[in-house]
Image (cartoon, rainbow, N blue to C red; front, side, top):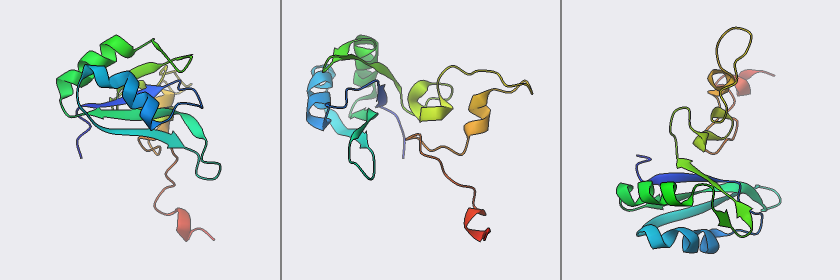
Amino acid sequence: MSDEGKLFVGGLSFDTNEESLEEAFSKYGTIAKVDVIRDRETHRSRGFGFVTFENPEDAKDAMAAMNGKSVDGRMIRVDEAGKPGGRGGGFRGGGGYSDRSGGSYRDNYDSYDSYGMHRPPPFYNQIN
């Protein structure tokens, strides 16, 4: 599945839901899908989500206009979802801090999926 037209939205208020996030972004084009990522156990927002536009150009316009704006009282970060080196991948994104080996910490978090959730290595269940 392509991430074209999909935006990562970070820094969300814990009160932000799919409806309020869609309302904030809908003036930039037709939205295909909105997801606010929630904790599996508490169902409380984890403070980030995704907005997917039907037209990728609308997503670019929304990203430029909404990055740094306030939604539900919190300044949000908006970036392309899945963008290498972008903030859209949870721990994979961000500052690109360097470790002692000369690589970046981002390189060490390849086992995180696009929601920032840790994926154990394939052999994980074979241990024990």
